View (tube, rainbow, N blue to C red):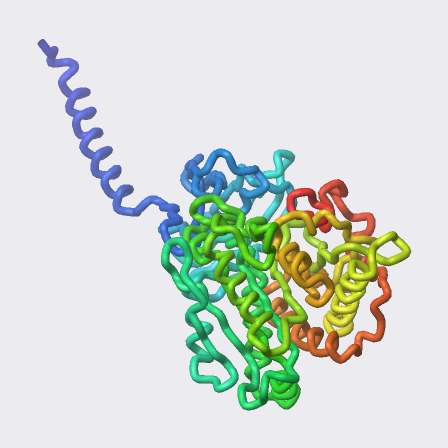
Length: 465
Ligand SMILES: [Zn+2]
C-alpha cells in the first residue's frame, strides 16, 4: 500500500519521468554522428565512440586478414555524417602500421580536398594521430591521403576520350572481372620505327595514389597540343597502365588484392624460359607482362624505358626517391650491370634537371644485385633484356616531400608528371649530360630524421636491393 504522504512524491517522479522521456525523445531527433567506410576505396577497422564528439578509429588489415604484416596497414578513408558544426570533433587514429607523423585530408564533397593543418593534428607517444577540428558541414570525408579511385580514373580517361593521340584499350581484366586500362599515347601519324618506347604502370599497391596524380599531369601535358608536347609525341610512344590493382583500389586496401596478394613481387618468371611467366602469376601481373612481351617482339623498336610507379611512407620531409640497381665497374659490377646503373642514374639526373635536384632524395651509393634473383617487375626486365631496358621503381612521398612548409598537393604531383615527361625526353636526348653518380642536395632530410633506422630508401619493407 502506498501511504498518502508518499503520493505527491510519486506523482512528481511520474511527471519527471514523462518530462525525461520527452526530452530524451527530442535528443534522439538530432541524429548521432555516424562513421562509415562502405564506399569506393573506403576503409576503417574498429570505430569507438569515447564521448559525443570524440572518436577512436582503428586501422584494419587489408581484407581483415590477420596474417598480414603491420606495415601493410596504412590506408583509411571514412565518411562522417551528422558532424557537429559548433563543437570541435576529436578523432584518434590508432593501429597504424607506420610511426611517421602526417596530416590527413578531408573533404565536404569528395572532390575538393583539404589538408588538416599541423596545428589540427598531433601525435602522441603511442604514435597515434590526434585530429581536432571544428567542421563546417554535417558530412565530411576524411582520408589518410588524397583518394584516387577507379571511378576517378574513368572520369579522367573519359575527358580525353576523343583525342587523336590517345588510344584507350582494355588490356585485360582483374580477378574480380574489372577493366585493366591501357592508355597508349603517341602521334599515330608518325611511323613507330624511330620512336622511343616507354612503358609505365601504377597502383600495384592500391592506396599509393600519388602516381595517379602524376600520370594525370603527364597525360594532360602530352595531350595538351603544345609544341613541346607534340614534338615528344612524334618521337615517343607511351604505354601506360594507370591502375593495375583495381580490385584492391575499390575494396580500400593499402597494399594487396582482395586475396591479399602483393602483386609487386609476383612476376613469377619461368626460369627455363624467363620471358614467360608461370601459370600461378596473378592475372593483374600477366596482363601487363603479356603486353610488355608483345612490345618487345612486335617488330617495332623494343621498349627502352620501364617505370614502375609507387609511393612510400616516410617522414614528412622525405622527397621522391628511386631504386637504381647494381653500381659501377669500380664497385665490382659487370659491364651490363654497370651500364644499367649508369642509365638509371642518367634518368634520375634528367628528371632532377626539370624537377630540381633538391626535390629528389640522395640515391644510395650502389643499388645491390639481389633484386635480380627476386620477382619484381624489374627482375623480369633484367633477366630477359639486361641493360637494354632502363627499368626502375620511382617512389613519390606523401608529406611535405620537398615542398615545405606546405604539404604536397595533387597539383604538385601533376606538375611532377610534366617533369617526368620532359625528363624522359631528355634522357633519350642525352641532355642530362652525365651518368655520373650525383650526390643530391640533402637539405631536407639531414639531421631531422626521427627514425633514422627507417629512412627510405633503406626501409626494409620496401627495399629493392
Ligand atoms: Zn608500392
